[in-house]
Amino acid sequence: MKLAIADHAKSLLIELGHSSWTLDRVAARANCAKGLVAYHHGTRNALLGAVAAQLRTDRQDRRMAALRQSGSSAIDGLWAVILSEHTSG
Image (tube, rainbow, N blue to C red):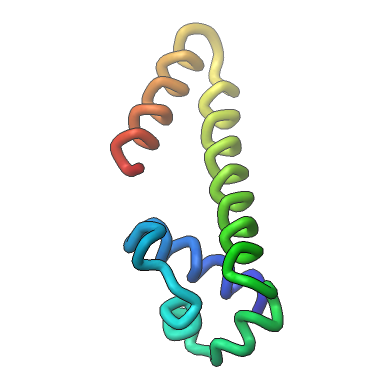
């Protein structure tokens, strides 16, 4: 459940942004009680930290996958990933 809550929190953060992101909304999206969110993640800031770590790992994985190509294709792939990240926020 802890990972599911973090996944829902991440999707809400991407969708709504930081200012509209609340534990109530995370709980509603995860279809669980707000207390369960607090039980698994403690505070709002702790959950945000977990989400930030997940986003950082996702971004790093995409970039490393692009660089696994050979030659200039690696640079082109990395550039495409960076542009996609910039466009999507």
